Image 1 (tube, helix red, strand yellow):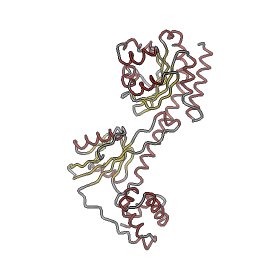
Image 2: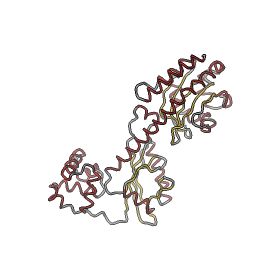
Image 3: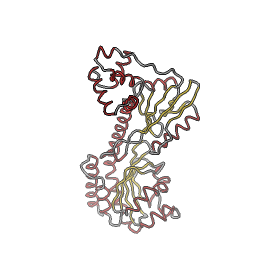
Image 4: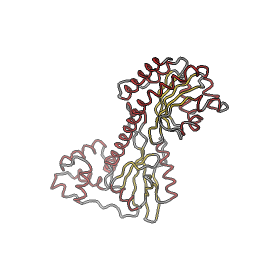
Length: 377
C-alpha cells in the first residue's frame, strides 16, 4: 500500500472510530476497514485486563467464530504477548511483532500451536491504549508471516495515524464508566436509612459511603480503610470478607454473603450484596462498569435501635398510622424493599407510600425525609 493509500485508509478508520465513539456508527466497522485493506488478515479491537487476561469489549473482522470464542474463553489467559510485551510498554505504543517479539519465540506454547499457527497469522501489529484501573484497549491486525514484508510498514503507519482518535475514545469511555459506577454506588446508598453502608469494587476500593459508615472509618471500628481499600478489623473475618467479595463480583452466589465477628471494639455483623451492573451502552461498553458490592455493617453489641416517637407526624403532616409505621422502619435502617417485607406489603405499595409521605412532609428526597425523622426522634 502506497502513501496515498495509507492516508486514505487512516482517514476512513479515524472517521469510523469517531462515529462509533459518538454512537453514530458501529464499532465493527473499525476492524472491518482495517482487515479488508490487507487481504489475508484479521483485525480486532478489544479491552483487556493485561494482568489477568480477561477480555471485556471485543469486536473483530475476518476471524473464524470458533477461534474468536476460544480466544475469549481460554487463549487470552495464556497469550505470551500479554506478559512478555504488552504489560511492559507504555500507553500509545505501536509495535510490529516481528520487530519486538516474533511468534517463533514461543513456538512450543499451547497458544501458538493450538490457536495462532492453525490460522497462519504469525505476524501482527497493534497499538495499546491504557484505560486505567488495570485495563487497556488493544487494536491489532494479524496476517501471515509471508505477507509481513509487504504489510508491516503500512499497518504500523495506519495505527500511528489513528492512535490519537483511539486515545480520545478511551479517555471518554473511562470517564463514562466512572460516572456510571459512581451513580450506581450513590443510588445504592439512597435507601439505606440510618445503618452503616458503603460500596466497594472487586479490588476493595471504596466508591461511596453514608454518614454512619464514614463514622466507623474515622473511628477505626469494624472496618479499616487503608490506601482507599476497605478491610475488616479482624484478620480471619477479613479473609472471609475478601473471599465473599471475589465471589460476588464474579457473579458467583456467596453462601449468605453474611458474616459475624468480634474485635476490640465489640461484635459486628457484615452483610454483602452485589449491585446490578449498569447496562453497557455505546462508548461506555468499551470499558464496561465494574461490578460493585454494597456492604452493610451492624453493631451487634449495641442496644437495639430505639424506635422513634413519630406521633407528631399525624398531627403535623396528617400521616396515617400505616405511613408512620413505614417511617419507623426507614428510621431503623431498612431499605424500602426491606420495610415492605417487614410490614407485609408489596414493594409497589411501599414505593407509593413513600411518595405519599414525601408529598405530605414536603421532602423531595429520601435523605431529606430521614433528616426530618432524625429531628423528630
